Image (cartoon, rainbow, N blue to C red):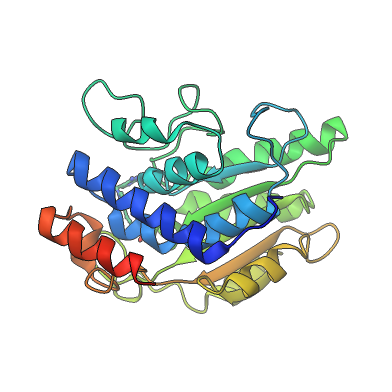
Length: 272
Ligand SMILES: Cc1ncc(C[n+]2csc(CCOP(=O)(O)OP(=O)(O)O)c2C)c(N)n1
């Protein structure tokens, strides 16, 4: 918990950091990172039991960014929360830099596992959740997945496994921004009825607006939603959220902003 927090301001600062990082490195996945800023803001500033001065504490909650291509949002949030110095963000995805383009553990305090190959975060989280049960530890494991990632069979194999093992210390959050790399989710492989699928796999499901701070916080505060069952939050989001010309645009999965676009985007965020 962080005292005196202003989620809107924090999320705006994280978005500005992401824009600068991706501009500097001229890399991709800006829309992917912007869509889940509000979720990470609430997680890191209100929900996760974590301590930036002790990033390896055994009872810490674990957070896994399964959509590891959006690493910029994780690094920017870790900087905002005091896990890593802000200055290091300049080294995101550049030759010789200390922040790799996909979330990477060991070299970045606060990053629990390396991700980027989609479809593995949930099963890695399950390993941690089982370990917690086995050790009698109270920590929870939160995993943020993307919607396109749910096209992968490994996600559903994990989903079955988690409910079979009654992992109520496991919380999946889906960043349901409705866009994948080259198309809209409902055109590539339609996930609907999405809620029913998770329910059928034995999870307790809540659907929220993934940009509404109150809804995110009130929902995540209630986990587990039911004893002996894993929880999943389907968060409806907008890819590119916060920068009007990037919002809901497939192109901003891969494009990086030029100098003029960066200026316009920062101006828009500053006026919020
Ligand atoms: C196993 C695997 N296949 C392909 C990719 C390449 N890739 C990176 S992002 C992406 C899709 C992005 O769409 P989505 O998963 O919905 O995430 P979003 O960026 O919209 O949050 C793909 C296919 C990957 N990272 N991992």
